[in-house]
Amino acid sequence: QVQLVESGGGLVQPGGSLRLSCVASRSSLEDYTIAWFRQSPGKKREAVSCISAHDDSTYYENSVKGRFTISRDNAKRSVYLQMNSLKSEDAGDYYCAAETRFLLCSEFITPQDFPSWGQGTQVTVSS
Image (cartoon, rainbow, N blue to C red; front, side, top):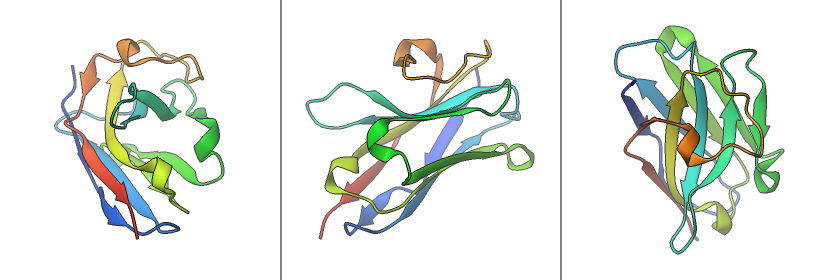
């Protein structure tokens, strides 16, 4: 399993932007499918975005399409989630997760598909 560390969360006003980072401790993330999950109080952990290992194809949950962008920088062992036009409903704890079976990103991915997780970073959207 790969060790992951997230950063970039914080407090932002509605309409603002944040960029979350997910960095692998030692290995490149090139051969990993990486997903960002969000967990809000009282809700299940849900996939927000994903980037596939095989072809870098991406998935976005409907509510974030057009506002969030996932990308990877293999040289920096990093995957990013650029979040623009943030809304109050985007708030929560964001986790990056990795898997090595070349899972194809889609609306069907679940937390159980990913064996490696970071510790999470909190996003608060409030005026």
